[in-house]
Length: 352
Ligand code: NAI
Ligand code: K
Image 1 (cartoon, protein in one colour):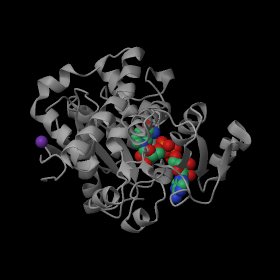
Image 2 (image 1 turned 30 degrees about the vertical axis):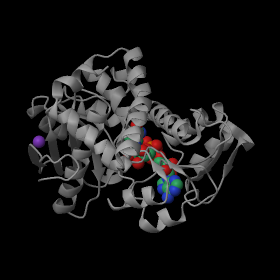
Image 3 (image 1 turned 45 degrees about the vertical axis):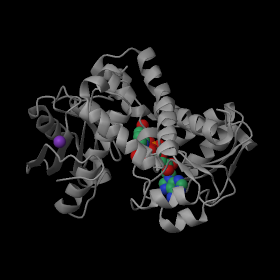
């Protein structure tokens, strides 16, 4: 289980199976140096256990990076449930899954991810205490889309300051790819800041909602990745930054919410080579983790807001280190993560 990004191997990987409910899940705890492992549960029709395991391991390490970069005293973990959420996600299966989470004694704490919702977490929460991000009705902090959008916005403004000398998107053209739970809030923040915004989303419901909210202030395009924009904000799926996509980019800044934006790690260098500034995904999109992690850490709403704002500070630090030491932004972010993992007391002190 040795991994490249943190140089640390996974601590514990648990296969969960319950034949009475059809549950097949894998819980991966990557690293608990900074605190208990927090990460969402992904519900996805994986082809098999090998594919699910590979995805879970990769995502769990990503959570270690995300928490460390955000200065949170939390570790990284992730769970994957093998199945089609539309067909297989029954309350009985979720309760069964919750019992497996409970057995880990709080070293893994779950939240929502692709294929799971706050409402699902309410059901999982019937059999385990170790769950955050439930609905507000059930005592959780609810949808983390707005906090994630705010964090992306803070990161984008910090990067704009470095690129264009002013921490504002006023007058910049920003392309938002995907206007779902995160992207649609990002659009609002950008318009408020004076940016001109174009969006792309294959979902008619998603673009109709943007039109209803903002009218003609936002242009809907078939795609924004290679559009004439200053900033490309991937807020849909990961792995959109392929070598070919990088060659076609017209943006000078890439900053968005999608997880695992680089199709292959080398793309980081290709972006830098073309003079494109990339804010690493796990830095820009930590706002949701700051929110749900805040539940676990007993943070007040003000502390959560401060934590989300601090994503701007982290972005400034990464761009500064990358510029000074001739590193890519991905390398600079990785170095900060490894430093915080090596000095856990310092990382914990700077949290909240
Ligand atoms: P969502 O599912 O609500 O929205 C995604 C949107 O992207 C949908 O409207 C979908 O139609 C659209 N989309 C799909 N394929 C597309 C394409 N090829 N081009 C343009 N749009 C496309 O998801 P959400 O919650 O907004 O998350 C967006 C991304 O941010 C995901 O990658 C997610 O993993 C990541 N993320 C979300 C967090 C959160 O708090 N919701 C936290 C951290 C990361
Ligand atoms: K470890």
